[in-house]
Amino acid sequence: MQNTLEFPEVLRLIEDRSAAFRAAIASAPDLDVQVPSCPDWTLRELAQHLGDGRRRQAAVVAAGPGAEPPARTDPKGAPTAPREREALDAWLAESTGLMLDAMREAGPDRGCWTWWGRSQAPETSGAVARHQVQEIAVHTYDVQLALGAARPLPTDVAVEGVDEFLTTVSATTVPWPFEPAAIDLHATEGRSWRLTLDAGGVRCDGLAADAEPGDLVVRGTAGDLVLYLYARLPLDALEHTGDTGPMERLAEWDPNE
Image 1 (cartoon, one colour):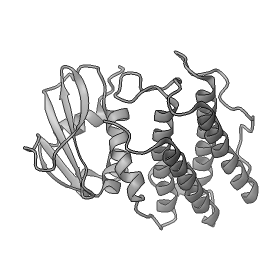
Image 2 (cartoon, helix red, strand yellow):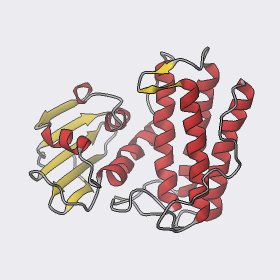
Image 3 (spheres, helix red, strand yellow):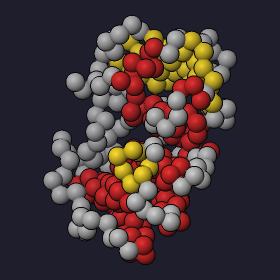
């Protein structure tokens, strides 16, 4: 599968979702509230995670190609997010800005370390940017959910997000150790995908909406599909038919073990 968005649009979506995350954090009456979809974290800890993560990605992209992540992953220090609200907002904005600056400097095709070396996603700054849209979008949803004001993911983010998850997180060249299977996902926005699980690994391909069904067929809005893939919604929240076993095994399987 190929990224359907140009690099500047991907960076714009990072800025947009980062702004939405900061707005949600700023609206929280109490940052010590637990996040139900990230039960080990409070809102403050989630903000720390998001800021730290963007600083790490800035360093990874800036370092260029490498077999291992760079040892220094915080280009401007600040190991702890500020507790004061305005300072926290500025720190989060700076964190995103550092990452975006590194991505603009690198361009979409420069190689860099990634954790997905055996997936269908390339090991480039453009692929890192594409994944960052989804990380920030899902964590924005987490904050909104904790505040009782969860909103659907924007359509352009969500449609891209299904494709990105399947090609980056699900796909692998590690042989599938179970019975071969095909899993179909159909977004109501008009995109469809098939995951093929067999001795060649896990592969994602585009799929005609009227194709013969696979072993499991899942339908829903792209936003709900993304939230399901990131374990924010149960499968029963979406329309599905067929054998759920392959998807359950895929969610539990670690190809690196």
